Length: 485
Ligand code: ADP
Ligand code: MG
Ligand code: MG
Image: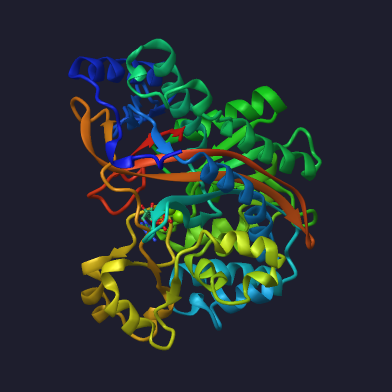
């Protein structure tokens, strides 16, 4: 079969057809909970919602690369579980004595909390839960077909699982309800992979709850104040209640400062007097979630309880960009997984190095047009690209360099056009796009072993090519799905 012509994508739609796809997509989104809260919800209770940003047409993705990404998720689930259980490795790479935590205050704060628990012998819960998302772009390298390349691996607050399931439903609905998708022979139901991410994520949380062993306990979602992406979280809450009869309590760090206690003798975490089995962090991944030391104190309180954390301090640290870069050094991956598995993962990695390495900064300056620099941050908007790199390097002192990694830029297919819609923008926008695939997985692990792990679903975010970053929440990109080619 001839290679798929990405530059000819998508097939032509008339203005009338696009208008109808737009109407059908956004109506379906509003009817099925593919929603955000509006920018200024009327306090104290929401009275309206807007549809999440969407792509009207799914993105083409090679079938074998999608299958490969799904297949290697289990290796990643095990790998990151093992990293989180490897104290020596994390101390070296992320610690505040010899690792990144020495120069990056945020990393240092998290690591110090963990170290304090260890020093006080106060780690009350051996089990940990990971709800992971491994992100990929298609990469074009000279003389070969497109390949899969990993962008990053997320171990905290991996979002848009439940909304991406609904984005896939929209595209299936458009396929079934209009004849417009007859414009391309690849628009067939069997090229639209199923997406059941909601139940997969909820299954992970329910497994942790069950392992905790107190059926009437609740799961705590730690959330950001003023969160607009609440529906993505609520869908998990509804699934947990309906399928597993588990109740969820939602609280911010500031609310928990008053409501949470850890009972001294049992280390049981109670929120407003209700026992908590599992703490699921949808906040706490960025320094702005900790405006004062009080939020770090609350995080510490939760961590020292018997509740199972998703993620724990060490699992959050394991998701650092520095860890990703160190794993790419020769022989490091083999510390955690066998060499056959290591080979499969390496095949999808870009070149990475630390700016503090010998020659690391000079190499970054020299090759800046093919590079992105990343700090130890999550949530989008933190990276430095291409021509911005040389002046940025001038501002870093020798110490600060240790907190940054350099990564070769992935070169995605060129010329793909997308039709994007946003509630705040009139009409649909045709623009050149890049699509990022995320594969979700869970792992319940502790005391040296992985108890259960699974690949559980996927998401696609599509962004305008002129924007370097892809965070849906930060407004640069839209939710999408794939059509397999
Ligand atoms: P974050 O944890 O903030 O999401 P990422 O590593 O995912 O950080 O980087 C944010 C975005 O930057 C990605 O979604 C992608 O669009 C872009 N990006 C990151 N690394 C690369 C890369 N190596 N090549 C091309 N684009 C990249
Ligand atoms: Mg991330
Ligand atoms: Mg990312």
